[in-house]
Amino acid sequence: MEIVQTSIPEVIVFIPPVFTDSRGYFLETYQQKKYKEAGIPKDFVQDNQSYSTKNVLRGLHFQLRYPQGKLVRVTQGTVFDVAVDIRRNSPTFGKWHGEILSAENKKQMYIPENFAHGFCVLSDSAEFLYKCTDFYIPGDEAGLIWDDSQIGIEWPIHEPILSSKDADLPSLSDALSLLPSNLRGTPTNR
Image (cartoon, rainbow, N blue to C red; front, side):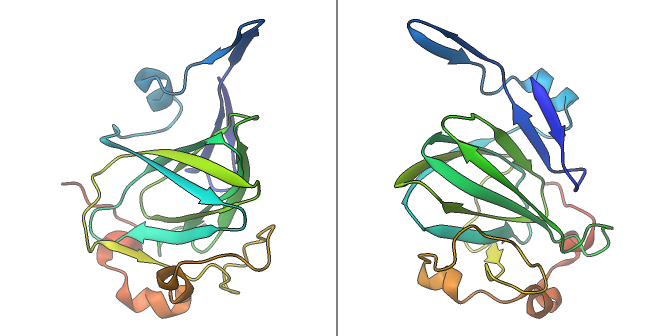
């Protein structure tokens, strides 16, 4: 497996080996020991899947008291996936890393706990899968506006399709006072 370090050390891109022949292909999408050795510190407890159409942008989401690390990948279509460091005491606070994930390139990206996450769909549609290090807790989700100039994400689309909730998210500056202590550099464990 190829491991690509990004400009934010905790955000990791994985390119698994793909074995192809005349019948098709095979790849290992997750193997606990290999991924722990590569830098994913926690076990995964929940898998999620979403389907979206072209120009849909989901995010930028994070959890308040029960942060989730996420290992994300695409099984159909192409997305631009983004992780934003929202750990207030981090040297990379407010920085982002984006990666094209597709069914063709089979890349995966790990978004650590206490990072905001979002993606936009570049193909006609996309199926997006992700493993989470903690369970979803209703009412624990928060977010940042997708086009926050302080963060400066270079999205490859300019007029995304947003949910009403995502269209009304605050900027990073406005959200600072809302962030609990675990988002200021020290993750909580349940």
